[in-house]
Image (cartoon, rainbow, N blue to C red):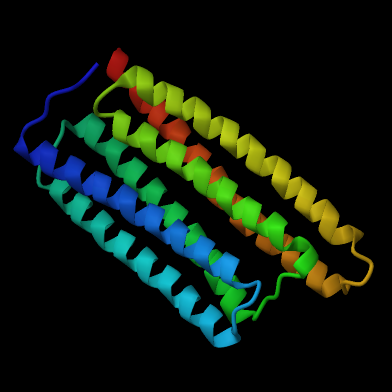
Amino acid sequence: MSLFFGKKEQAVIELFHEHLDAVENTIRKLLELIQSMKNASSDKIKELAERVREAETAADKVRRKAEMEMYSGAFLPNFRGDLLGTIESLDRIANKAEAVADEIDLQNLKIPAELFEDFENLVKKSFETYMALKDAAKEMFEDFESANEKIIDTEKFEHETDQIERKTIRKIFSMENLPLAEKIQLKKLVHRIADISDTSEDVSDRIQIILYKRKV
């Protein structure tokens, strides 16, 4: 099922898609940062963390443009409110990615070699969760059934993220050579990364409600 919109609405949809891309780019930059932590210097890690921040700022700018377009009268009031809430929730995903980068940079965190693959897998799965959400968000304007399928994928990937999260935390606290303070820092970092996936699922729930409303 596809919906038809006027020029104002189409302009907002284009900005909405641009914002989805900008959030994706923020998570991609975070993945680059995590992958660099295996061998990169402290200066390189700081540089990559700054790129995550720049990507998050870019996502913020697109979000504000989309919101201004909607406040100018695009969409009916009920749907406008739902879409505004969705964009704000999507932007929180970029904020979560930035928070991970900040924690790594500002606390000068190191990932032990034994845990590197676990952290990389956690970010990759969080990214996969977001990509399923992104597809659902795009299909929200075009094909309700396809959007529903992508929401199911989002939930599936979020569950898989939870499994990696628990496995990684268990592994952290099984490492006898790691001081407790470092274990606690790494556990917090694991939670922050997994929050990207959790928030993606939260947004998919919001989109599911929008789809139900549009069917009524």
